[in-house]
Amino acid sequence: MSLPPLPRAARGERPFFLPDADVERLLNMVVALTGEVCRLEDRLDRLERTSADPATLAGWAPDAEASAERAERRAAVIDRVFRILEADAERVLNPPEPMDQVMRRLAGAGE
Amino acid sequence: MSGPATDPAMHSMSPRLSADEKSLLDFAVSLKSRLRGPMRAALPKAYQAHAAPAYAAAHGAPPAGWREVGEAMQGEPVYRWWSALARAQQEYYVDLTASVVDGQLPELVDRYRAIASGPVKGSLTLDPGVAVPDYQAAVDIHCVPGSYFIERCEDDVWAGARSDLGSFVFTMGRHGGLNEDKGVAGARFVKSRFPDLAVRDILDMGCTVGLSTLPWVDAFPEARVEAIDLSAPSLRYGHARAEALGKEVHFRQANAEATPYPDESFDLVVSHILLHETSREALGRIVAECHRLLRPGGVMLHIEVPVRCTNPFEQFLANWDGPNNNEPFWPTLAEMDLVAPAVAAGFPAEEVFEAVVPTAFHKAGDWLGYGARKAGGRS
Ligand SMILES: C[S@@+](CC[C@H](N)C(=O)[O-])C[C@H]1O[C@@H](n2cnc3c(N)ncnc32)[C@H](O)[C@@H]1O
Image (cartoon, rainbow over all chains, first blue to last red; front, top):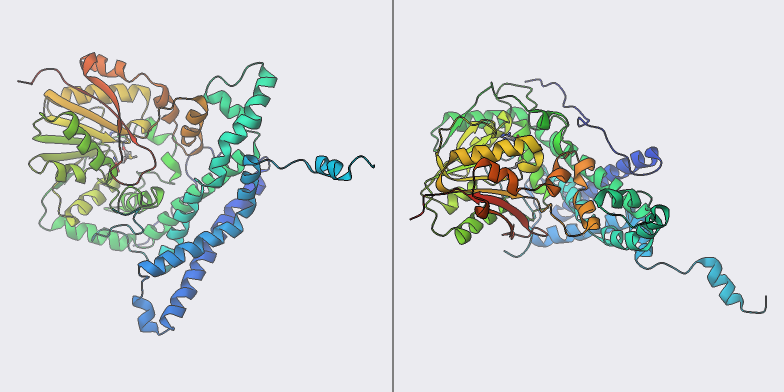
C-alpha cells in the first residue's frame, strides 16, 4: 500500500508570537533537536544497561526505576536547553534591581 | 491511583511504539509539563506588574475583558516566549504522533479488518452521505494536518489511531491510561445527581474513538450504548478498539445536529468536549436534538473543558487555544448563555444546570458539566 504523504501544515493561519518570526522558526527547530538529544540519551542508556547484546537490546524496556531515572535526565536536558526562558520568568517574578541603580548605590556619595 | 500514567494502556488496536519513538513521546510529554512551570507562573505577575498598568496608562482604564488583556499581554516577552513554546510543542507532538501512526498504517488497517470481520459484540454503521460541516472544515482543529477526516486508503484508520495516541500525550497521562477521565467523571456525576434515573439507552455524541464512551458501558452495564461521530476513520478505529477492550458499543457515522434515531430513544444523551468544536448555531441544534432524542425525565450532559473563568486575565489564558490552537469557537462558548438554547429546545428552565464535574484521575482542574433534564417521566 503506497499512501500519499500527509500534509505537514494544519489548515488555518499560523500565529507567530515573537516579534521576529524567524527566531520563532528556530525555536521550533530547537524543540525538535532537543527531542533527538533525549532519544539518543535513552538509546545510550539502553545500550549501557543491556551491555549491547543485540538479543537483549531488542526486547528491553525500562522498568519503573529506569523510567524514573530517564524522566529526570530528560527534565535536566530541558532545563539546560530552555534555561534562558525560565530564568527570564524568574526575573519577572523577582525583578532584579536595575544595574545602574546598584552601581550608583555602591559608588556611594564619593563620586 | 498514585499519579499520572507513564505509558498508554495498550490494546490490540494500539499503535505500537519503538523504543526510540517512546523516547520522543516521553520528551513531548516532559516539555508539555514544563509549559505549566516557571514561565506559566510568571504570566500573572507580568500582567499585574507591567502589562495592566501600561495598558491603563495608554487607554485611561485597565483592560475590561479578556481581549483587552490579550492586547496588554502581547508585548510581554515571557508571554510571547511561553506562547511560542506552547505552539511549538503542539506542532511537535502532533507531527510525531502523525508520523508514528503513518509508518504502521497498513498494519493497523489489517488489524482493524481482522477485528471488524470477526465475532463482535458491538457494531459499526458508516454513512458516506454525512457531510463535514463548516465548523469542522474551516481549520484543522487543534492543528492536526488532515484533521479527523483525511482518508488515503480503503478502511483508513489513521485519524483515529493518531487521536488515540495523541490524546495520551496531550493529557500527559493525567486522564488515565485509556484516557477515560471524561467518561468516568461524567458517569459519576450522573449517578450522584440523578440517582433515580433508570438508564436503558445511552447516546454519546462526537465520540471520536470512544475514549469517553467506554466508561459509560462500565458504569451502566445493563444499558445499550450508541456512539456517533462525523469521522469515519475515527469510528473504524473506535469500533476495533472497543472490541479489543471487550466493550459493546454501537458506533454510527451521523451528525449530532440531526441524527437518524427516532424521538425518545434514549434516557441519557452525553458528549465530551464536543460543543467547543462546533458553532453557536450548531450548538443550538445539537441541544434541540438531545431534547428530541430523550425520553421524558431523561438527562442531557455535555462534559466540557472548564471555559468559564471569574476574571479577565484567567479567561484570556483559558481562551489561548481559541485563536492559537485552531479552536475557533472555544472563546465564544466561554461567554455564551447556555440556558437559553436548552430552554429554546424545550427543557424546563429550572432543570438546566452548569456544574463543576471533578476529575476522576489527575487532570489539573475540573470539567464543566452542562446539561438539563427533560420534563415528565418521574413517578
Ligand atoms: C474533541 S473530539 C471529542 C472527543 C471524544 N468525545 C472523547 O471524549 O475522547 C470532537 C469530535 O466531535 C466530532 N464532531 C464535531 N461536530 C460533530 C457533529 N455535529 N456531529 C457528530 N460529531 C461531531 C468530531 O468529528 C470529533 O471527532
